[in-house]
Image (cartoon, rainbow over all chains, first blue to last red; front, side, top):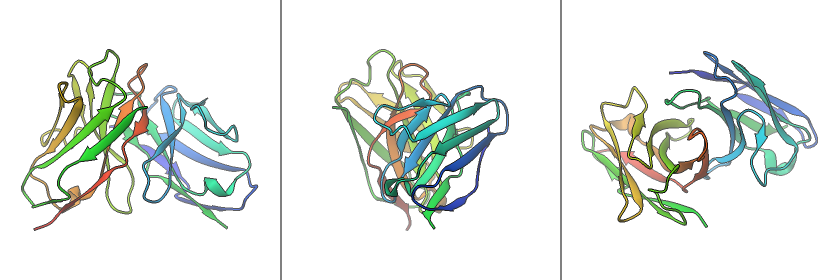
Length: 107
Length: 121
C-alpha cells in the first residue's frame, strides 16, 4: 500500500488566517490526489481532485498543489465553516489510501 | 439527484459476517464508467478504504482485508453490497458507501450518510 502522511495532525487557527496542510506519499503518485473535508457526524465531502482541480461548488479560497510525493491543501482566508477535519487520498494505485487526517481547530 | 443509502444490522457478533447494502437512486450502478466503493471509519479515527466495484463487476480490495471482504452488485435492485466475514471488535466503524468519478475511478465524489456497525457479543 502507498502510505499517506498528513501534517500537522491538529492545526489551530483564526478566522481570516491562511493555512496549509501537507500530505506526503510513501512513493510517487503523480497528481492522483484528492482532498476531503469532514465535519462531525457527517460524511466526507470532496473538495479537490487531481491535486488542484476544485470540485464544483467548493469555494475558491481552497486550493491544492504538489506532485510526486508532496502535496498541500491551502485555505487562503479561513471562514467559520472551514473548521473541520481534512483528509488526503491517493488514487495512483488500485488500492486507495487516505491520510490520517488534520483537524483544523479554532484558536 | 444521486442518492446513496446504506442499510444493514447495527450490531454484529464477533466471528460473524457483517453485511451491508447500499441502495442507489438517481443513477444506474451498471452504467458504463460507473464505480462504487465502501469506506469505513472507526469511532474517533480516520478513513479506511475497503474496496471498489466497477460497473463490469470487477472488484479491488484493501490487501489487509482481502481475505474477508466480498463486494457485489445486484443490478435488478440497483444496489451493491459489502460482506465482511469473521468480524472482531476493530471492525466496529461507521461504514460509508460512495461513488467514484467516472474518468479515473479514483476519488469518491459522492457519499452516503454512513451507518454505524458495532461488533459486540
